[in-house]
Amino acid sequence: MIFKPQGVCAEEMHVEIENGIITDLKVIKGCPGNALGISALIKGRSVDEVIATLSGIKCGNRETSCPDQLAQALRRY
Image (cartoon, rainbow, N blue to C red; front, side, top):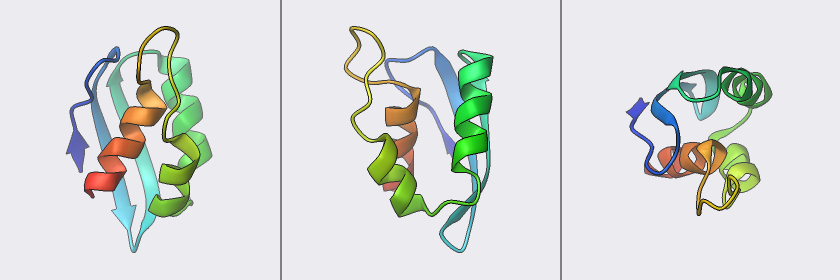
């Protein structure tokens, strides 16, 4: 799945999912360290678990964040 997040630095999120489990995440642009950290933490977890964990996280004064945008992408999945 390729998702174009809104309101964050990242331009695209490439998510691989098998049988409801996230197997890989690659983030295009944005903060490389945060993207790598998020990717490492969500691999092997269920889509529902990641949505519940990351939904609603804000970045500074923004109403959203890369984790929140990822949760929105997974909801659409």
